Length: 332
Image (tube, rainbow, N blue to C red):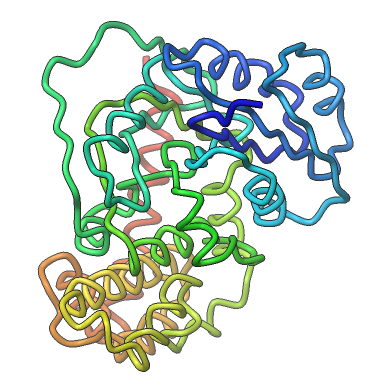
């Protein structure tokens, strides 16, 4: 059997209303040298039977008891035959140029361990139509940590492809409650260059109980007072802190890694502030690493304000948002 260029790995759990659109977006690719690996993670709806209705020799389906998205992705990666593994969540979808753009990056940057196109973030009820080709497209190798410190969404779990040899070297996704994808991209970037394209070829759909929504639920429900050490901020920060302490091969990127860690800390401070965990915000102010660069400076100074001032600003934010919702709901 001829080895395909891409193995498309799709973890599946209770996405019966979306998986057909997702798979059809793969079959519609202009670049057709791929296999599709769907790993059903113990779905309790008709997701699995929906997938089994597709008749294509390139489709391979694996099933397991519910173990989480990391386990499902790892099963897909283990069974991938292609030299490049492209990931796609079961409720997102691709434009027809996606795999062609990833192949372009692979060929242009053979040293890359991960490649990614850009993506649209859309609401569930919206209808995104990929139309026309973007005329001005930039491709380049990036300092992932510097780029992610400015915008954590520099890549997403439906836009990336990882070299199988890279995955074999660094292992699989961690089994954690959230942030497993960010930890994995950071782990790849520690060892390999990352190539990106500005061409938007992916629709990441919000509002379907995806990874970002689940992360927000965890942030709102867990005991955030535990987030008072850098190790507890996120899986990616925990991994990077350990590397900063022990690895000797990342000195040239130490500055950008510190920027990334501070940006994740800034995000955690914002989330705690929004949830009203003012004591946690104050405690976390001491966790910033030096130097604190432009991306995190606002939250660094904010978290060092008097506690009463932080609390007043939080209440003002709640009031303003409530007023905005009222005026929007009752606007003529």
